Length: 258
Length: 303
Image 1 (cartoon, rainbow over the protein chains, first blue to last red):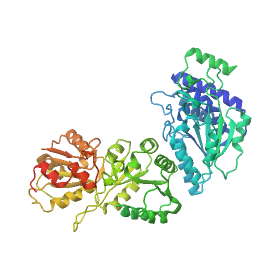
Image 2: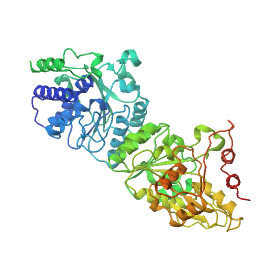
Image 3: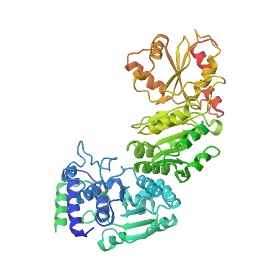
Image 4: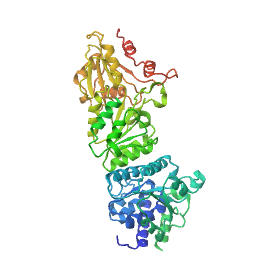
């Protein structure tokens, strides 16, 4: 794919995502902003038509919807329905109704095991395509994710690519304070993944998502900032749940447009 | 029933999309299937949550997935995975729970399944199949293979009376014609009632039916002869399952909603562990009053 201006795509997507959440009066903005850049980069510059993307941190659905909108898969009218009565764009990805959303998620620890199943089906059928699965960092407190890594290693699912959005904050505290796993990468490597640490917002770093061998199982540890791009949200726990009021929305728009 | 089920699955192994997952169970039963399916037979290990979600992922890609374990490990441990990943996606994944009810006897409460179909039938699109006899299994596997929604197969121990012929599987079957109350038994327990009633006089013994597919949601699917006898002579429902989510509750609501009032109604169900002790499947059935003699006594029918 021809490389467009990533910065332009990102600013447009951030603005539209904030508007969606402001119009709907809903939160989860911080974790959407930490994950958005990687989702945009994957969908614009990494994934092919044969690939699938599983959003295991389903509370970042807004970022996924905006990403699909930026690729022309979802329409403006779709985004306007976000969280509305009768919408398909629920606060967490819905089951089997939207192109680009192969699985519904929302309860953490489900996306990766399902992605393993999708990857296994393709391996058995010798079908091309990779399954990209984006998890949160707090999500690694779910035992099912570790079950999935054991399975992925045993079945050598080299068509599975795991990404972890390490923004360091979860619903009611920092991951360090709630359930520290210290160096998550070492745990991943112990479960047979080749890990790479990337800056989850820097284009030059995200470019490395395209550089990997297809013989190994890869995990990208994305160092991110919760609330990225909005000064009063960055690294602030309250923006996990807090919705925007008018004043904070105006301020956020001013920052993004500056 | 496990070996019969295994043969039924082996017969479908030519379907290249057929894939079988087991949670490290099936020793001395599923080896022929493992051999036949090759890399489409997957021992997912002792990790039921992952196994169910992997099954959902395989089904999203279009594979025909069956998942097997001891009943409670199949439906209770990974319940959210069944709810979210299979049922909310309306995927035609088939779950198989071995040892329904008190089937694992003195192995203890962790291995019993007293709320399996009740819990699973709360989920969208789910149907449960409870074969009463080994000969039912092939037909049920065939039916489940064809349905395009989730299914649960509750396997137990065949208790078919020696020398008695069983008609081909259907959701409702009359096992013994009688002039008394209608007795509906769910699953293998029906065999012991059949045996018990063979020595009773036809005019006074109950009219015995076995139910093998759940839920019962449409009264028009019930045999007319059964319905009319329920009104005339009453209904007794017997099942190796707890009260909540039971067939007895389903039928009571359905009959009342349809304007059919049984002359009398008795519901015999699994009571859990009244004495706080453990034993064989028969022991637990006796403790719950599920043995045929106990039910006949409760109905006031002379032996």
